[in-house]
Length: 139
Ligand code: 5GP
Ligand code: ZN
Image (tube, rainbow, N blue to C red; front, side, top):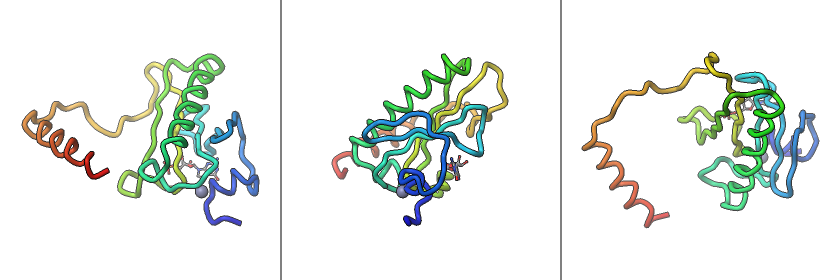
């Protein structure tokens, strides 16, 4: 048995409330939901996080996540959807098989954004943009 929790769900070695599947990806319910209807989308193939996953799996996951989001709107009456993917412990990731959270939202709900909307220093923002542009050549 794999030591990865979500690989065990892919292999049906542990149960999950599956809601949709494609050739590359699976959607199932999060059992510690941030809001009612909170789902997770994962690729069948293991990779630790979105920094490691291949483009085809990332595309398949985002496509399925959008479908789950539309189902949350039409089926659960969500007013909006938060899509979220954490990579590495510094970002708060706890299960190291890449996944996208699909979190149904209601107008005025209690879901808390992780950062305050404060305007940044434009010189610093421009410098970070330059460093990120430069880093693409090393990708
Ligand atoms: P992360 O913190 O890595 O972004 O998200 C991991 C998610 O997996 C959490 O939202 C957590 O509630 C969920 N989770 C942890 N254990 C299980 C489990 O056994 N089954 C399901 N369906 N979700 C789980
Ligand atoms: Zn895995």
